[in-house]
Length: 248
Length: 248
Image (cartoon, rainbow over all chains, first blue to last red; front, side, top):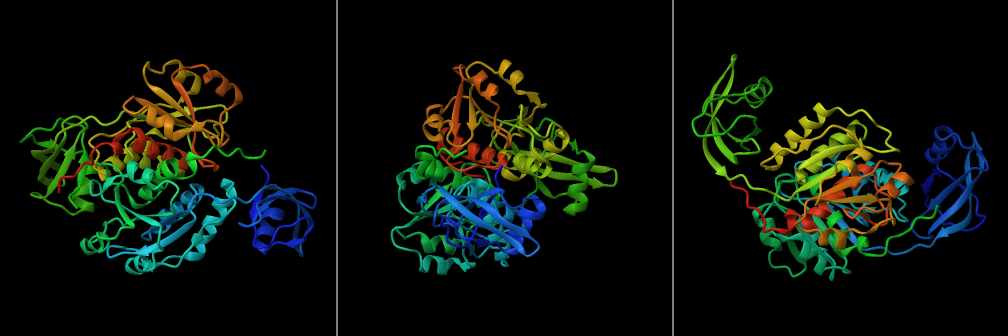
């Protein structure tokens, strides 16, 4: 497998890019690559590039883009909002929802949220790694934890917000997701304790909020986040498009 | 939260059930419950019962069903077949697909399967715990690891087998799953290395096999298992039913 790295710099033929120390270490020490080896680069703006290592020494590793192998393309526009979780489940959610194509990861503090501290640096690092491995051309934006009322207060016009509810509380997900195909959307998955009565009342009258049920069983919050996103992709998002054939 | 336990014994009003040592320890020592405390019991056959602890001492814990709170009901008929994974991902798959309603978990050995030993005892224990927590009335059956050719050789008539493929290799999941709504089905998720050419050739001609693509990105095997099952439930399984309202 050719290594695939996310970089911040612009990508253009022949530019020499010095890599940050951790990426240099990964290529030179972990993968034991040296000058001349090939890799793939993406930065979220310029598509995917084939590149070669042009210097690999103690002073650092430099790579040089050779040619673009894939154009940057816009995917479905989907945000995932979730009450923060403990370390292992939140790592898992960050990794999995990146693979499943979330554009934004937004920790939301609700009344019953037990975990209020979020290691954003760790969350971002998990999303970068998952984006590199999954063939995505972007890395999801990870936002600062925000109180639910503030999320609702700044919610953009035209974006539907699906409240993924306790079993039986909302309508079935299938028709709700399918009806919103092609629209920007957000999926909000509550904490283990569910939403508080007044939190649900506060959204009850909003035209841009839709309560959906994720089936008849009680799902852990991390399972719910993944299940909601996978279903949204199948019904309204990128799984409905012609399959994308990866370059080999 | 009332504790909820899966038991092997038949459930009927007034029967005294001695619990196995681990369940007794859990109630008496971990939860610190004593005689008179309430719990819920299910056994996969007799629905869910409210029960009370009728003895809790060093000699063991006994419980007695009081009344049935939920009838046993048949759900959608869905098997999950997956190439064995390392310990942490396989624990995760067992837990999550139990929450998402799989009836059978079947480890399948394919050409590119890297992990060939499966701790079935651990897998079963994970499914029991997830069934207890998710409100299911059954525990999935965990089968012995089986070679792919043998799985195909004994595949039952009338059950569709979805081969969940590399990006772009199969048709989109949505119409394929929706077309099989109401039919017994199996979802086969391959190993990280994908299926071998001759494995795909061997199923190419079978009427009961359908290759589907799980979107445009490269998913880890554990992500793929969850995503496939969540989508199947939304499109063909229990998420399409009227939501089930849990008794409180």
